[in-house]
Image (tube, rainbow, N blue to C red; front, side):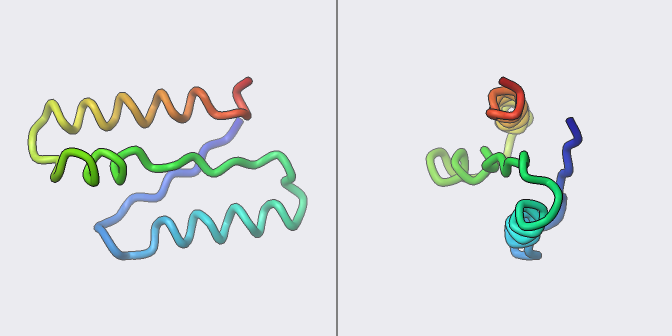
Length: 74
């Protein structure tokens, strides 16, 4: 399995680009593709800014968990 990650400051289009790439792949040769949600968005909406090392660790740990639980790994 291959993973593609997008990194950048807020508002540069990471999510839009990921969604567009997913749609493109599904329309073409890659039918078994999945877009995993970004845990950091959920964390920020629930707890506020990620401003400590422990917050960053929790976000990273949860994102890895979400990616490992995706349907492509099952």
